[in-house]
Length: 486
Ligand SMILES: [Zn+2]
Ligand SMILES: [Zn+2]
Image: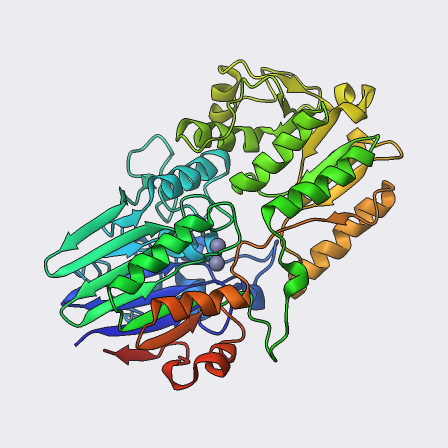
C-alpha cells in the first residue's frame, strides 16, 4: 500500500511539502518555505535565530516534526533543550530523495534543513539558477540549499567543515529506484526548468504537477506533460490551483499572455521619453526577453544590476537562450557600495563581482544614465528603489511593474511603500503589465479532464473547493498533515 502525507502547502499558496511512500520508497515532492506561516511570527528584522539551529522553527511549528529528516548540526540545538522528537540526525534511510519541481523558494527553500545525504532530484536549469542565486547573496539560513553554513558557525569559512552541501542529481526522462519509476517532464511556468513528475510503483501511478500554466510561451511542454501523464492512467493527480479565486469568480482580466505583455509594454515604452524602469524577476526568461526585445526595438540600452548580471551569465552559459553579457545592448549598473565613490578596487571586491568584471562587461553609473535617461530600460525591483535618489528620473519616465500583484498583507505594505517612492519621484501610478505564471481556472480544469485520474488532490491553492464544484466526488480535499492511502 502506498501513502501520501501532505505536511504543508495544502489550502494555501506555497510551502509545499508532500511525502510520498510508494513501493517501499520514500520521497518528498518539494520542501518549500511557507511564507505565510513564517510571516505569522517573523519579518524583515525579526528572524529565526541561527544561534538556535532549527529550534525556533521547531517550536513555532514551521517545519514538520519528523524524526531523522533534518541535519544533525541543526537538531542538536533542540536536543540540548531535551527534545528528542526529531532524532539525532544519525538515523538512516528515512527518505530516498527530494524531487524539486522548480527554482521558487516556496518549493525549494527549506531543503536546506534536510540531512546532507538526501539527494535533490531536479533539472539542470533549476540547479543552475539556485546555485547562481546562492553565489550572489550572503549565505541565507533558510534558503541556501546547495551550499549552507553548518551551525553553530564557530569555524572560519576556510575550514572545510564550515560549509555543508546538498547534492543535486539532474534528471530528465526516467529514473528507477527498485520497483519505482519516476518520470520527469518539463512544464511551463514563470521560471525556466520547472518540471512535473509521474511516480509509478506496484500501487499505481501518482502525478504531481508542481506549478504550471497553459498560456505561456512554452505551453507545448505543459501539453506534452499532460498527454504523457494521461497515458499512465493515474490513480492520483496532485495539482496546483493558484488561480482559483472562489465563488466561481472569473479572473479573465488577469489572463494576459506574454504576447499581450509585449504589446502593452511596447505601447508604454514608445510613448515614454524619459527613463523606462521595468520591475520583474530576471529568472523569468520570457519576461526578460520581452523587455530586452522592446529595448532593442526602441533603440534603448538594457541595464541590469550586478546580481542580475551574474544570474544572466549563469543562465546564458546553461544554454537558456538569453543574451550574453557581451551583448552590445546590455549594460551593468554599478550601485554605490562601501566607500560610495565607485572605487573599483575597494567597493566591488566580492569574488562573484570580480568574476563578472573579468568578462569585460560594460558598466554604467547613475550619473551616466542621467545624461540621457531616454536611452535606457533599467531592470530594477523593490529593493533597488534607493537608486531613484541617484537616477532622479526626469518628467516623462515610467515605472512598469511586471510581476504578480500583492496577495498578502506584507506585500500590500511593500506596495504601499513602493508607491510612496514612486509618488516622491513623479512615477505614480506605476503601469502594471503582467502575465501569470499559473494556469487560469479553465486551463486547470482542462488539465484535470485530460489526465483523467481516479482521484484529484488540490494543493497550492486557497480555493480547493472549486475543483469539487467542477469534478465532484473525485476530488479529495486534504488537511495539513493528513495521510492518504492508495
Ligand atoms: Zn509555487
Ligand atoms: Zn512557482
